[in-house]
Length: 128
Image 1 (cartoon, one colour):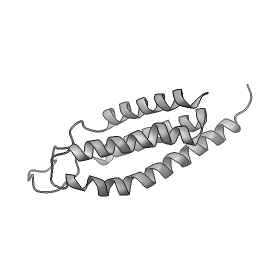
Image 2 (image 1 turned 90 degrees about the vertical axis):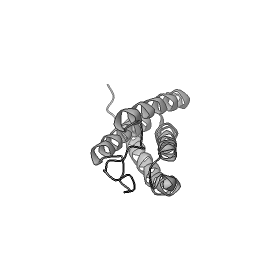
Image 3 (image 1 turned 30 degrees about the vertical axis):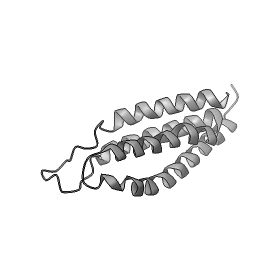
């Protein structure tokens, strides 16, 4: 399968997954004190997002290789993280750049690894 359609479909699926897994407004503070820093994301939301991104990365690797998965899954996920973090109006929201420095490398590495597993699965599939 050609790479461009796969990348577009993966990017669209990544955006949908992001909007389903995470709250739309990261400005809500889950504490009574607005000056207390607390993440608006729960562990369950993050687990859903990680599982979904891993599944999308595997499919991308299976269909078109790790590069397609990186472009269609990792890049939109990092861009969405940057956008949602930068637009949040809570204490500590201005640290989104630092958060991106900690998020992007493991996310890209994880997507590349899972996509490589998908590519290997494609090569080793049994003929029908």
